[in-house]
Image 1 (spheres, rainbow, N blue to C red):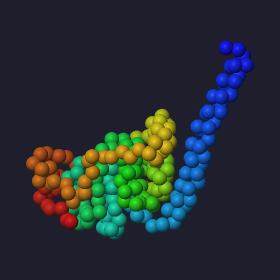
Image 2 (cartoon, rainbow, N blue to C red):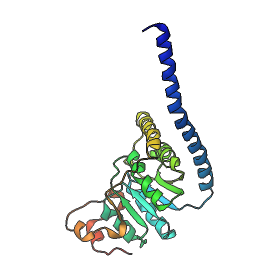
Image 3 (tube, helix red, strand yellow):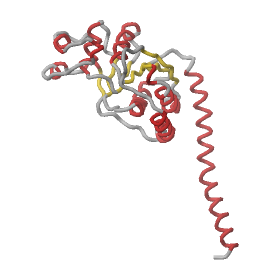
Length: 235
């Protein structure tokens, strides 16, 4: 192949790439502008959902109190404590459970948002409060802003004070890797909708089955199986 032929082929390749990439870039820019407008609008609206990240039962103790204050606001607990332990926390403070959902698929912080995003979108949530711990920041907030923000959901944080060391520990490497895959997923999630097969209302937890076997709640909750199984769930 001569030098002229090589140059001609390279020019054709560049034209093809330009024709392919230009519409994609244009669409992304339009999406970005539109999403920015949505986020600015969502930031001015009232909080319409709570997302609680698993990793410490203190967060679930906190959200039980929130449920008493805002019984009509949906609450999603992602990758949290054992189901009966959460039931016990709500029982103890007589908090309503009809607007509380458990998502038990997430095994990581990235997984929290991976599975929560479709649920929040289904609810029509536009302004959420993210319940986590100070030790879980800034990674949790960055991932929330990237993944949920890419779908026009405004995120603000509600930080729960911790005693001891919670389950979520941060490192620069872990944060960096999660941010990178969140950016990738922010694009992919525009066309792909993952679905968790283990989502249920707190009021639907089968306490009869749970109480047949032994379970343990995190020590900070000060909940014993006998006390949890000796009460009924308030609906």
